[in-house]
Amino acid sequence: MIRKNDSRYIVQCKQRRAFKVGVQVVREMFGVMTADHADGVVIVTSGMFTQEALNFANGKPIDLVDGPQLLELVRNVQTKPQTQPGRRPVPTASQPAPKSPRKCPRCGSELTIREARRGPNTGEKFWGCSAFPSCRYTEKVISHNS
Image (tube, rainbow, N blue to C red):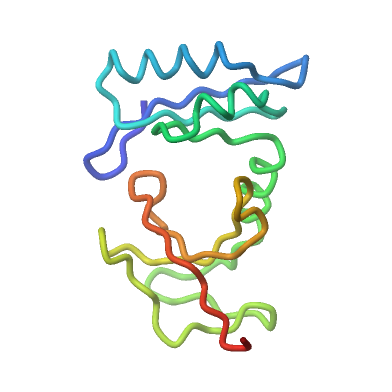
């Protein structure tokens, strides 16, 4: 169980020799979440989830993190610029400095640009709340080149 602000999440990590985590694991964790009155579930695997597991989780407070997403999260943590307390990181050439941080209208946390990994908007960029998964606010990125 992890806590973020006033929310409680159940987290389960799965190393799968068969490489796929099935719907049974996702259903069981949904049941545990309901019984424990948790706000959500995060299931992390070094492998993949079956389509049936993805379908079951869709629309529920269940976050499924597969191997490629986990690797990306680890790489993002490893490549974040180190800062001293009270100082902002120096932007790199590939990451221009924002004029001012965008704030989430729901919770006040900073918004960050993300890329949809699944669903009808796969590959598209969007603004997402940095407090995810406790806040799921998103908005489209408006391109100034169009």
